[in-house]
Image 1 (cartoon, rainbow, N blue to C red):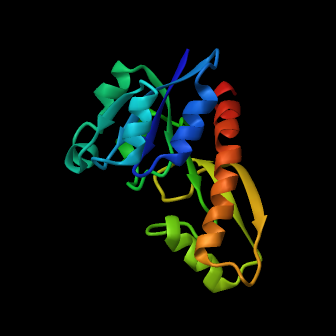
Image 2: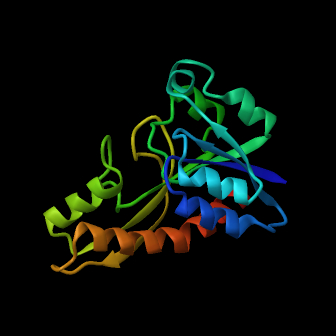
Length: 188
């Protein structure tokens, strides 16, 4: 069995889709949900699915052992970032080379980098008047939103779109494609 850990900071809608997708999978199991925000919705999602959770704190994550012992204890082979708002530190990337997958709510390389997440991305897309937006699923390296692209999908935008309507269109793409791309990548 290939064990994956989902790292998330918020409500957990992508985590829910991933958990649902792998619930009865013969080869892949979500065995841990890692969160940096007490009370985040993703923790309740994990509890409802009887998945172990790990609440992390900033100093240990960035200056300590990056919780590597807990990941080893759970035999984690892949880390999935599903709305995780901290940059992954280099020691964790080194421990999981080419085995950390992120989803970004834009078509990278546009609208990536520090501070470009959630509504900030959608506001920038609308302000630029872009005719399309979408998602990028990519491997994580030491730079924000930089690693090898695994998949992109687009959605058309109209001049009437607002950051909220762009967010809804992009979220639909995330929910549709993220679990499938994870599965394809993990199984190689």
